[in-house]
Each structure stands twice: as structure tokens, then as C-alpha cells.
Image: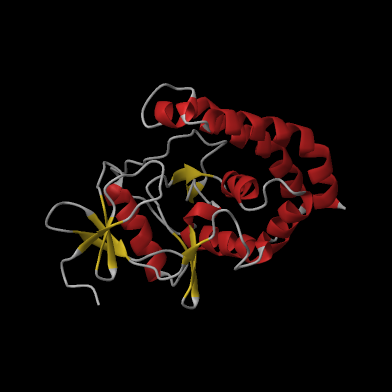
Length: 240
């Protein structure tokens, strides 16, 4: 049993430092985006979407407090939920956020410019941000949330969860309920979404320069090339 104010450091992420668990909460360093993220998570809770942690405001040290989620992270992706279920979770998220009206002074922490901006999306819909267990499947780490599109989020999921495997991307699309036009649109976004990560890692800012030096740049350059090469096979699987 954790003592009421005992702080347990949480490690494993590449970007955000200083995360701790306190009881049944997580305390995250706040940033300019925190009020907007708090409003978004509050909206999702109010409309009954259970695939995100509940936001609990800020603590006495100004840290963002969110609900602790019991379970395991799925990275590298090892199916707990199937890819069809992951696609369905993404669809429920996007449907739930449709009615969200961001604060007038909203500041977002999105690092990669999206293809368009017709609703607020997660922007890091990836296996390393999916916790499953204890009866729930939950997307964590919302600091990158901001305006984007449904397909932009789903393209990142295809890169992360499905690793560009044609049948995996098809399962995601099936779970989401994409029509044929959006399936073809998704194929075109895959290399563009991966290239966005390459551009960010080349930008020279931190922590991106550190991650590039650690090998992430070479990894994402390879993923981008693979996304271009795999496009015909992926499209064939999606629209067969």
C-alpha cells in the first residue's frame, strides 16, 4: 500500500521527465498546454469516454494530476486488445471529441504539424501510450494533443501498432470503420506522418537532438522509406 504522499518515479519515456506516481494518481510537469489538456480530458470524462485517464487538476506544486491506470503498456506491441479493437478505440475517441470546444486561449503541445485541423486529436496514438488491464484499455500521455484529423491520428497508429503490416493496417481501418476513400487517404498519409517525425528529429531542438543522436533519426528515416515502399501492398490490403 502506497503511503498517501509517497512519490514513486515513473521511467521509460523518451521526452517527459519528472513523472511520479502518488497513490492512485500520476503527477506530470505542467506546461503551457496543461489547461487545454485538462479541459479536453474533462470533456472526455463528461461524455463517458473511458479510454482516457481522468484529469484531476493541478497539485500544490503546479503539476498536472491525472488518474493512475493499472495495467501494462503494449510496447513493443503485443496484442492485448486486437488491432480491430485499437481501431475501434480510436474511432470512439474521435467521436467523443467531436463536441469539444477548446478554451479560447488554448495552447497545445503538438510538435509535428498535422495534415489539417478539423478536431482535437491525441497526436501520439501509439503502442507506448496504450495501457490495458484491470478491465480498461486507456490512452495515456496527452501532452501532445491538439488540432489535427482523424486520419492523421490513425496513420500514427498504423506506424506504431501495425508496423505497416498490410493486414494490420487493414484491421485498424476495419475497427475504425473507414470507407474506401479514407482508406486510400490513409495510405497516402503514412509516409508523410513518418516524415514528420524525421523532420522533428532533424530540427535541432531538445529533446529531439538527443533522441536523434541516440539512433531515433536513423530508425524513422528507415520507417519513412518503408512506408513509401509498402504503399501499394498496404493499399491493396485496405481496398481489396
